[in-house]
Image 1: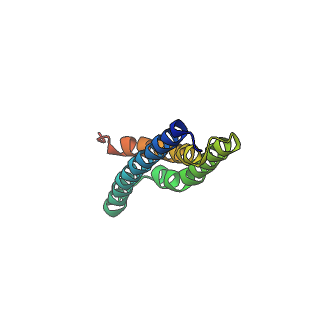
Image 2: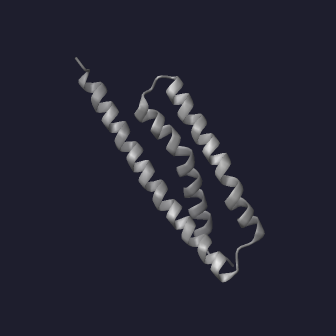
Image 3: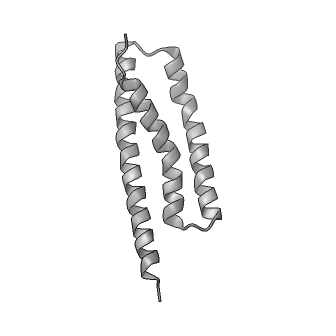
Length: 104
């Protein structure tokens, strides 16, 4: 028989992963819009274009590392999923915040 508290913990972790994923998607859309506007207006600096390309492999490597650590610790699939989403979500959130600041 399954432990009811374990099932509730797993459900709560899946909900956290779903929320983290949704927040990441919203931040990513905001970043895409900001960068597309910069490209269309011709105001994108070379540093931003470089950052746009180089940040992804680092974020995905960190995501994979955190998910693998969680899986290796036998925390469950939900916890591994949440651990994998968090680094990408943090990066997209920081990008959205940085790109939304008004330029002087």
